[in-house]
Amino acid sequence: MTATREGALGRLVRKVEERADAGEKVSLGLVQTIAGQRAAGPMLLLPALIVISPLSIIPGVPTLVGLNTILVAGQIVLGREEVWLPKWLTERCISADHAQKLLKFLRPVSRVADGVVKRRARFMTGALMRRVGAMVCVLVGCIMPLLEFIPFTSTWAASIVAVYALSITARDGLLAIAWAGLVGVVFTLGWMILKMSLLG
Image 1 (cartoon, rainbow, N blue to C red):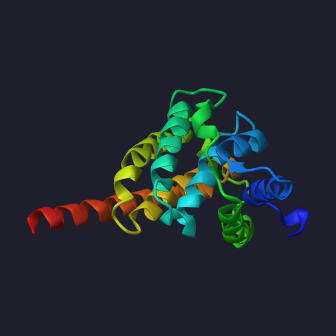
Image 2 (cartoon, rainbow, N blue to C red):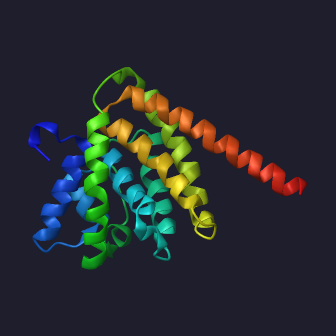
């Protein structure tokens, strides 16, 4: 990936990879150090991508990501400038083997995302959209521990969080609009499935 084509996700993945190659453990604390305490988007984005990746099969991962989502998105809703996370959560890390598997998954994902996502229609990623979107992410984070027991559903939940996080990180208003459509489709399908199961 050339530097000129590297976007928000590519930069984050590259910096994490560099630190991992230097011997640091991949954790939420590392992401926070790289992105900065004011960068709520990346702190939502990378954990959500872990749930979308093959590492989602690790027991407890969707629950931890759900908790991270609640804490980070909740602070966006409250309008906090700096994001705080408890030390026990920031120190949770994945093994070196799992870190390599995650980075192997993230490299092509970041290339595709950075090829599509760009800064545009920034008014759609303003304070109102950020807070409304964060409220949706808080709700998603609350149900993620339950979805851990239903195959593939946690991936859909994490996708909602990831697309929102990428839109506010890259300041891509068109992606924010697409995210709103994704939320509508997922919640509609969820309601239909729930209704059918209750009637059945």
